[in-house]
Length: 281
Image 1: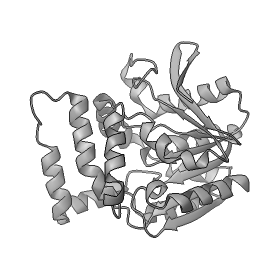
Image 2: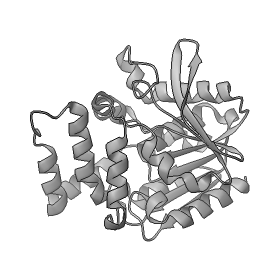
Image 3: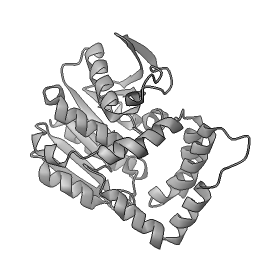
Image 4: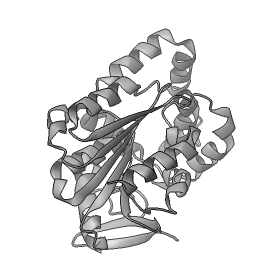
């Protein structure tokens, strides 16, 4: 195993292919982090699936950013399609977690002929979930305290990437039902991940303001598995229910002992659910 770089026309796309079986493309996380963390926690899928990961432009060995639009979800969706063609897959399952689910949904809507199935994990079809999290900032003292600490400038030696990493380490415990069993490994992986504060800024200021695929959900023609964590504070199951109601051929599963990360907190059940679904499509 190890990453490769596909040079497709004017683009370089860093990617990695792991496992064996039907192909499944994992959509990049649009706010500026490489695939290190997710590839680690999704290894349980590799006995049954060929997992394909890629880095968005501006991260790792993928092409450098040359214009603001290179940060966008639309650019990510374009590179997902370029990579599918490069690898020679006629059809491919597409998986997305959290903000990666936004790109997965956009890809399935725009390229229905190329998508065999869709797996959506702790994600949403628009940004109404943000209002709920804003309420938590006002009412949950722990979350409010963490956000206050995240707003502090850090020390003089910190780069912007280091500051972003520090803030993720501060905030991610809130996203789990029970973070402690995973803290050491999770923070070690975050520390090893490549990050881009410029991606995060674009995601917050541009992509999130424009993201809304609710009206397009009925156009999704492939089977979709929608997975949610009962204790997810950022994207609770009601937003998964909205997608399940709108996508014609979908199945919703709620993990009762998970927050935003059922792929970690209930890993075995997660793997069994995803493999069973994809093997049946």
